[in-house]
Amino acid sequence: MRAAIYSRVSHEEQVEGWSLDAQHDLCLALVEQRKWTVAPEHIHFEPGRSAKTDARPAFQRMMR
Image 1 (cartoon, rainbow, N blue to C red):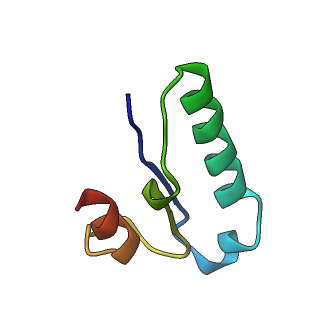
Image 2 (tube, helix red, strand yellow):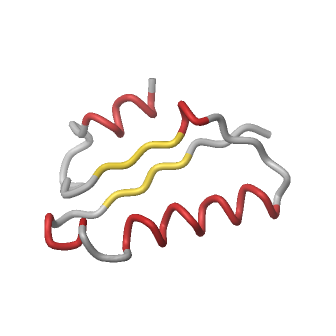
């Protein structure tokens, strides 16, 4: 099975913390555990974007 990874934090202050890296690492671990594949072009980061709307650039790229 193929997977996409989308990591997001809602506040700029969280960007410098562990949150994006931790989300990414947990997603990669799940992909590996389930023997899925994820291509580099299907890994998306959205630092400092609120989820109030889906008009987020990385989210839109992932959905396409």
